[in-house]
Length: 128
Image 1 (cartoon, rainbow, N blue to C red):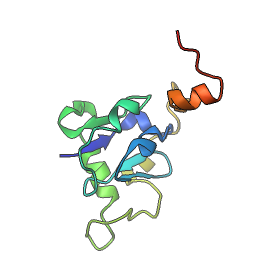
Image 2 (image 1 turned 60 degrees about the horizontal axis):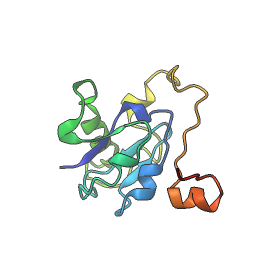
Image 3 (image 1 turned 90 degrees about the horizontal axis):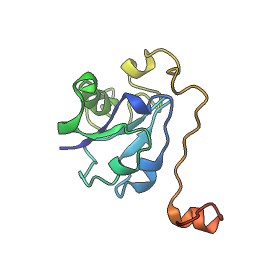
Image 4 (image 1 turned 135 degrees about the vertical axis):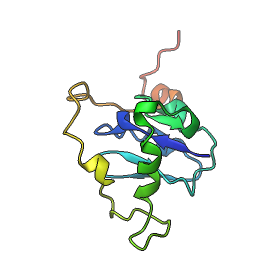
């Protein structure tokens, strides 16, 4: 079993999941992030930190995004057909590359993640 990054990540790529992943199995494409199913240890660290709720356990993936299980896996199949790092050289899976430009609800939105401790050090955290 593995975790999967789905459509909400496209054109957002927040990267909070990358910072939380203990095994560094999340890689960056041009428009989205991808989880390497061969490296994912099913720890769940990435799921709760995603601000756009794009990370799902493959068993919980909404039906409309079911094909993202294959998209994430295929992104890491080398040109020789063997599992490995991105065969696209950092580009995107063909289905992601073919998606229309920025989704209207994402246009102009800048999403970032910061930990409570980091916010406190930067005087951005005001505990109640």
